[in-house]
Length: 238
Image (cartoon, rainbow, N blue to C red; front, side):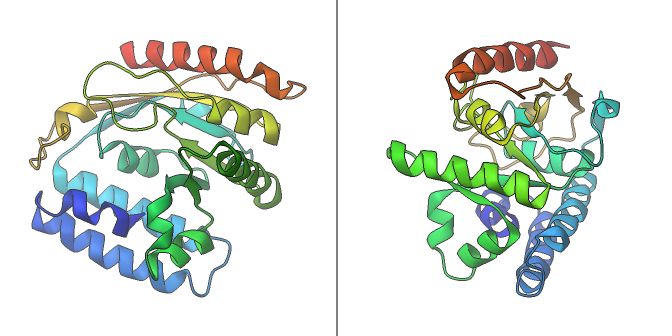
């Protein structure tokens, strides 16, 4: 994930670029030896903390006690800025993986690194391939005992919040694990879309009550998606 963010951070701050290159290189090397992705995730968490500290961003976290350290979840958050990922990485102490852009998996070295770390491609425009990727995510959760983070808006939102896509709800139902709504506030002011200047503003990360999915059928994904979007909006509003 570090190398995929380098382009976004390139014009922001030399220290951020240096940290991204350093930890990205360490993660790339670690991925050749650690097939579980745990070392890469640990490095990602340190990178995120360094990035936030360098940026002068202070994060207020609420609801962390709702997460069990030995449980698996599908984490569902709004997406307003490139700073959302570091905020979640630095402050949610779970082993979790991402859905990343499909094009990143075609890049030499980086693609292999992402696969070995356990990250999964986001497939757009191909329903069959998208279903296959989500099913792979469900197997990852069950087999490795990890969680998965998704931004179901399908991209950053310049204003307000886009309608959630159903992939996150389907993944939670398929894996039989709780879906956790997460509201992130303030990151748009830290790093707005189209900006290359980081502002040291306060950020809030609110974690909602996990929503059980055990016993739900895939046909329930629409209702679960609506519930998740409503909960996330409430958490964003505080």
